[in-house]
Length: 164
Image (cartoon, rainbow, N blue to C red):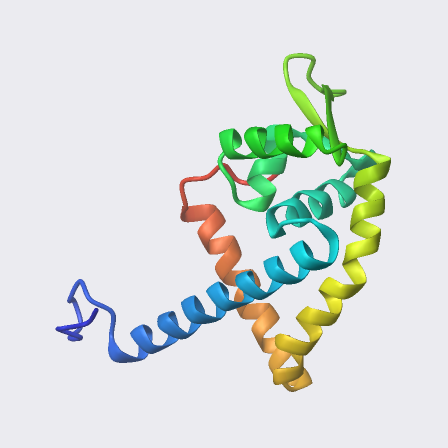
């Protein structure tokens, strides 16, 4: 990936490449582990869990589909298709937006709230064990600051709409 690591090169420096590969490996493995735990334990995918958490964090357990997509970093069409599958399973519902009659809200159902409540403790335990247990407290503080800054940078400079 870095045949030429000199400044001004289109390639990553050796240090950047090492950090990027570590991030990618961590991201992919954590995604696998979280998805496996949620699927085996609760019949939810990590995508389902992400939607449920975002809706639970929204006022009245509902938000516009466009805003939901932006919040979880998806294209609107992906969110819409995924919500259709979740609606069929009774985890979410769709309704005319309370703020814009032309828009659609995603709504957290009682079954969706119950699924989130049942799956959250095991998910949090897994995140503690695989992610945070490998770090000292001061490292968690630094990592949180760095990740927040990077997330905001990507939201500002990326191509997806920014969350509200």
